[in-house]
Image 1: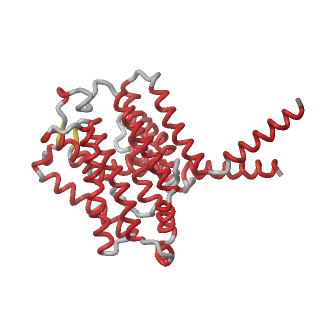
Image 2: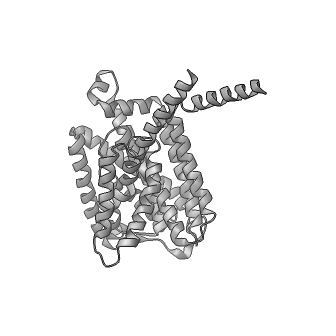
Image 3: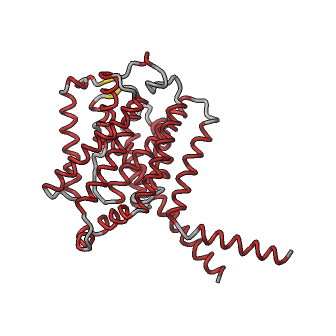
Length: 350
């Protein structure tokens, strides 16, 4: 009995040591568990309001991953990342309304068009040597220009915007009477997004992204084609945001230029989750996403009555505090705890 107890103890320590040997795998596990929990909790939620929060929370995680690949992995400061979401949303609704193409295809087409826009943005940035602050300002200027253009473009509804006909409800049209199907669709997309992000991070391409983020000149000196990999990161992130935009369109059923070319929405839907969770980390968009949207809804529900602007002040202050107190986000705090536990297990084994 003593021998088997010792053997069991050694086996447990060995298993724990092996588990603690790879922080990336732990982040992947955390991300998948969180998504699974959202799916399980949804089985007990009957309120359409709370179900809607869960749908948007998962969408924010998905779009946060798209921005994390560009800004977190390769270090490109794309402030107005929402232009890719907007293009994906418009592509999906135009294909549906004008050509009768099912949104199941339209969402993917939105990703392709947004990816092509990302390629154009990367080309202009490389052509004129736009980096860091200048690149960030360029994306903001591009967003303003696109908003003005879409406001005047009658083919996509101009200032009135475009909406879906709710009479065409059904699976082929991706219009459902309840919010549950939307949650399951975005959960599947987000799970794919988490896996794509993980495999990119683990691949040679991901290592090159990180090397460029840390020191682009040094990476170039070592033979990394920085132009190619910067473009690749932007195209992948843009395409994912375009897919997210297509889903957003099908969920909200109506969009207009001031709504989807908006920096406030850009911060809330694209940037907040990775910043709160930990920009550049694998679990950051997921951990930040489950805090971001519920917190925003809580603040909005608590402070919006009779206090104009108070919601934005409190929400913005929270984001500033996170940046100041947790510069690496929630994932950074967890990583410190992980390293401490790892050292303790190593000392125990010695």
